[in-house]
Length: 121
Ligand code: HEC
Image 1 (cartoon, rainbow, N blue to C red):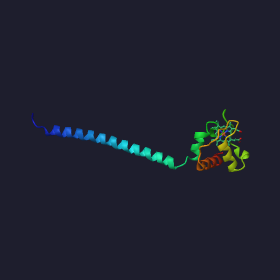
Image 2 (cartoon, rainbow, N blue to C red; image 1 turned 135 degrees about the vertical axis):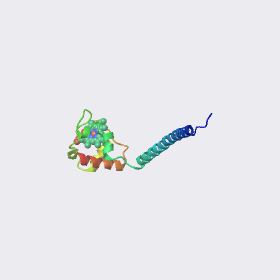
Image 3 (tube, protein in one colour; image 1 turned 45 degrees about the vertical axis):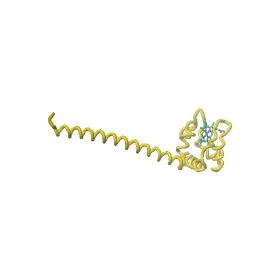
Image 4 (cartoon, rainbow, N blue to C red; image 1 turned 90 degrees about the vertical axis):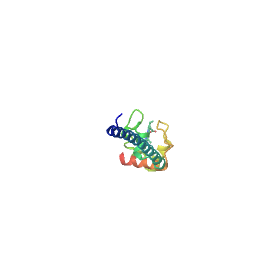
């Protein structure tokens, strides 16, 4: 067989490209895993914002603060709860008429939620 430098270079380029692609995929995977770790750590150290808590735990029954078949409007809650502490107490305890108590919020998260409510409604 005659020596064909051109085909050798061609094969070499092909291999280099394949190897490069494999490496890029690997690097991407490592980065993605690192990002995941970072987000997990953020969540462990940081607290949920008021808006996050509202969407997660309140919005189903008080959509946008308005009434639904599951809960009343909370738009004029300020008339019912004169102090922030009363409101916090109600949120944590819930009520017998169908409002579930929020027992697993940290005090920071409860504060975030109450501030969000007073800003939004
Ligand atoms: C399963 C449905 C449900 C969920 C979830 C829920 N609530 Fe309620 N909520 C109710 C019901 C029912 C009442 C009426 C209870 C009562 O008056 O005793 C109520 C009452 C309230 C009131 C008093 C309104 C007023 O003016 O009388 C506030 C404020 C309130 N909810 C805030 C929240 C917040 C904040 C969250 C999220 C942390 C939340 N609720 C989650 C059902 C729900």
